[in-house]
Length: 260
Image (tube, rainbow, N blue to C red; front, side):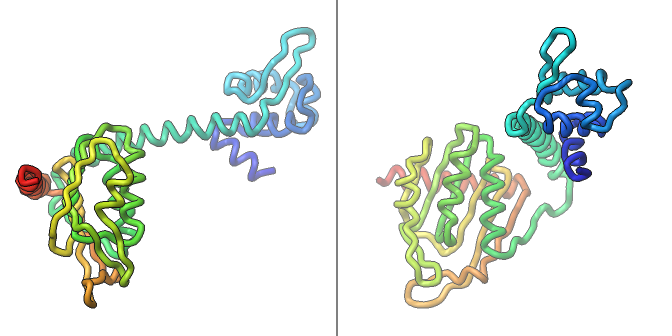
C-alpha cells in the first residue's frame, strides 16, 4: 500500500488523493461516502479529495443526485502521466543542456578521456542527439555495433542535420570484418554524403563545429584488426579547436568530392 501511495505521489497526488484513487480501483464506481469508507478517509474531506482527483484526470464524475465517481483505468492514466513526465523531463534536459553548453566555454580545460567501447559509443550517441546543424565523421575504423548506434541516433534527431563522412571502406575488429561505407549507404539517411577514402586508423566525430570525440585504439594482425578493449575516446569542447578540425575536414571533403 505504502509503495503504491509513494508512486502516486510522484505523479502529483497528495496522500489522501492516492488513498482515494487506490480505494476507487477496488469498487470502480461509487458515491463519495462509499469511496471514503473503502479508502479509510474522513467523509468531511472526501468531496475536496475527489474534486482534486477529477482535476488531475484520475476520476470522472457523473453529474446527478447523488454524484457518482468512476475511476479512470490505471493503464490509461499512467500512460498519459508518463508521457507528460517524459515531456517535462526532456524540456528541462534541453534547457539545462543549453545552460551547460553556454557555460562550459568558461571552464578551464574542457577535455575528458573516455574508456571502454561502450562508453565511447554512448557518448557519441548523446552528442548526435543534441546536434542542431551538422555532423562530420572521419572514420578510419568503427567499433562493433557503433555504426548501428550512430544511425539510430541520427534518425531520432529531430533536427534536419547535415551529415558528411569520410571513411575507409572496411575495417576489422577482433578479426571480424565491418563494412563501414556500405552500412551507412544502406541506411539511406537524409542529408548524408559519404566518400570512400584511405584514412589513418583513428576516428573523429564533430558536432556543430563545437564538440568532438576522437577515438584511438591498438591494432594487430595482417588486417590491422582493432583491439576494442584498448580503445580510448577524447571528448574535446574547445570550440576553436573543434572548428579548426571541422574546417580541415570540410576542405578535404570538398577536394575529394571535386576529384570524383
